[in-house]
Image (cartoon, rainbow, N blue to C red; front, side):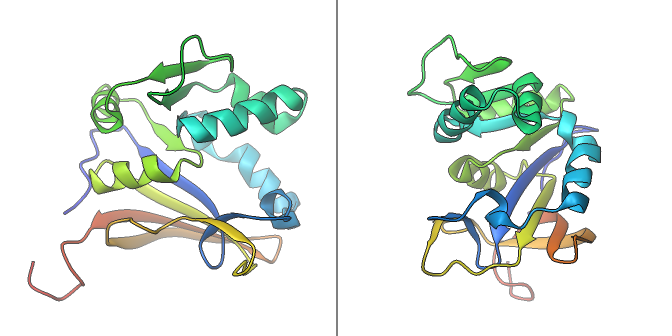
Length: 198
């Protein structure tokens, strides 16, 4: 089943992973300590940086905490000034992180409504939210930046456990700093393995 993108609106799942599909690892620094100038330049230049950010409560708590502790970091300033929608039934208004709007109703239905209005969105973290949006057929792009590490012993937050089966059409790939791999896909939900009756 294909995604049901509406008009020019885009919803992009945006993950940073180890090669074995973990979102983070105990004791490792951010970006696994392997970020470089080409990758940072791409982060600054990408047009999707202006998209409204979608996140769940856990990611909001983590990222807003980083922003409060390091308010002068360029990456935190950018996240603070970007519009953010936070899906949670456990957080309360008002949210303290600037430009954050709390939504306590169904995330899938709210994202479907916002997409119908022509807005574009990207996710940050929020593995369960991303899985729900993917399963609902709302995701137009699935972008992964793979860092060249395997964190089998220390890895935390396996990204794809519980996700649906998805076919991915590669639309862009790039290598940054000779080691970091960008893979940008159009996702299609699958009813079964390719080539089998639906």
